[in-house]
Amino acid sequence: MSRIVTIGAAQLGPIARNESRQEVVARLIALLEQGARHGCDLVVYPELALTTFFPRWWIEDDDELKSWFEREMPSAATRPLFERAKSLGIGFNLGFAELIQEDGSERRFNTSILVDKQGKIVGKYRKVHLPGHHDNEPWRPFQHLEKRYFERGNLGFPVFKAFDGVVGMAICNDRRWPEVYRVMGLQGVELVLIGYNTPVHNPPAPDQDAHADFHNHLVMQSGAYQNGCWVVGVAKAGKEEGVDHIGQSCIIAPSGQIVAQCSTLGDEIAVARCDLDLTSSYKTTIFNFAMHREPDTYKMIVERKGAIPPA
Ligand code: ING
Image (tube, rainbow, N blue to C red):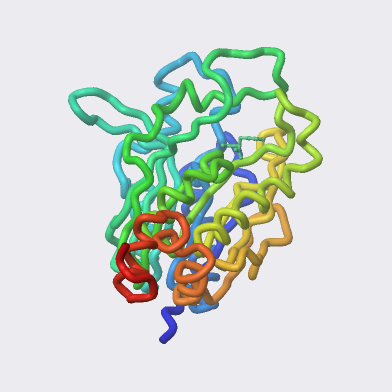
């Protein structure tokens, strides 16, 4: 039996500071329609896909800062995306800056949602690993103020039954930390969806710039193989407000192999038919956590099978 999900990695080129939500949503819908022509069931967009990557700037005016956030989802600006996706029978994963009243106070998160083919939000994740710094650091050619503008995610690393499988999400810097995949792997995740905005240059570590593309794929391919799951990584790419970002959006099989990849730094969709049943070979053999990672469980299993007589 095969559980095929046809997935589109919908990479975005730069989003200008003065580009409206409506203009961006039109680009998202264009990619959605390309995905429909390729038979996609699910389209994956980047982190903070509705705006330019505003944490690159020191923003003192709180009203200006809040203008980069979404107060409701769907909103008037994003409803056309939800409606078009529903009419095409395609689900999607969307990253955006979330401003919400929760527990009696205003909360701000770097958020990603999973929307099913009926246009219903069936999963939400809030970014845990917030890279960069909290205060203005004028020595940098550009800032990276996620620690200032967002709270650390408070939802953990959940997985969701969707698209006939077990689906999880991560956001950008999360993908560099192996425990992110493993926490979801221990929940049986079969498909991890990741959006990213990754500058080529990392001011505190310029020696690593030359490896930006390599590190991007290294961490996602490792996460896929070591947890027997599919991983989809989708970039906001290109020179955005003067800052060069990597592209390389891709779809990675549980073997760790890249099976589809974007080759430009603009709006581009890479598509692959992803058989979720391919995860089983890895989850039941080399990365069978119960058998090889939890010895007491192993002993119980083999005793139950009678291979080793009870002590
Ligand atoms: N961006 C980057 C990322 O982890 C970064 C931060 C840039 C880390 C360059 C290392 C090198 O891909 C976000 N948004 O997390």
